[in-house]
Image (cartoon, rainbow, N blue to C red; front, side, top):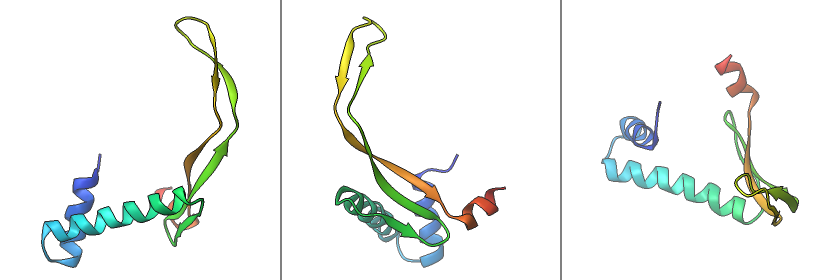
Amino acid sequence: MANKADLVASVQEVLGGTRADADRAVENVIAFITKNLTAGEEVSIAGLGIFVAKPRAARTARNPRTGEMVKVPASRTPKFRPAKALKDAVK
């Protein structure tokens, strides 16, 4: 399984420079996506996909331990729609 450290190492390998520079680049991409989703905007990266924050309606759920009904407030949750190029590459 690949993780953030692997991504940083890959960026460092491609760009050269220090590991700290590569880490800042990866952190900047994550912060950019987070900031735009928080603002309600989509983030589209060609060849990868689209990040979007979808609304979730308020609902009533059941606590599995007690069986008590609990109100769950409306919220937004991040979603990812992969690009066709990514889907085809994974097939």
